[in-house]
Length: 277
Image (cartoon, rainbow, N blue to C red; front, side, top):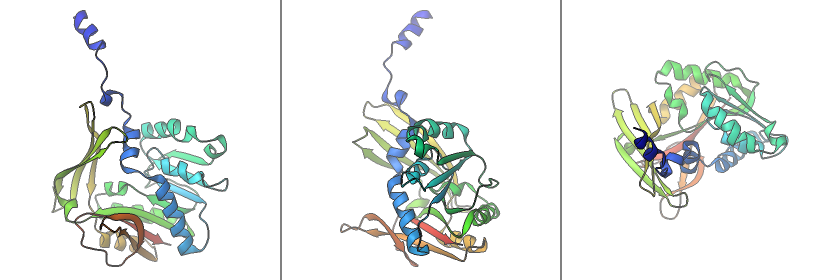
């Protein structure tokens, strides 16, 4: 028995063994610099002033909040998440690495977004499709009403969403990230067309052949753009505008989003919805 333990202890750790799933996630799907730029630009275009106070719901590691306060000493961010372990990771690896002056302007709260109380903010965001966890329409409406109450009189509430025929397929999409040494795998494992419930997962495969399966799992309802817009207006927002992604010269998404009341019949798309109080 002792010989077996010794052999196991001498085994060289794989890349999967030593990987940090939060780092992998950010390298795969997040671009907080672009998000902050889009938020500020959109707010200034709509309101004609600068936004200073951001609330990031379902904030996870709070990378967007940390990026927000880097704009200057007047900027503050509040991150809200119900999962203590991911908040602790964010405190250590994201907030903790900021200069002391920036660190003091990021506040992380372990709380439920349906009940949390914060000062009114300029911008409230729920990104990475996180709010799709609210399967019942009534619960989503309740959340949107809370969002309405949480922004200032001229505040904005922004969510992102995805759609298109491919979003309803049970499929896997692999993206090789050579610069980071791994492959990101988005797995739409199950979709139920009667309820629009979907079960998704993120896996990672490394160049040494090792894998991290189900690093992240999701149980979502896939809402449509009209559903989200109608719910936002029902919650009290006076206007809800879809911001659609433009195309580059090859017909691929260029990362630039602008108001669009029609969109395009793409097989898969990502958009923002901007709600004005």
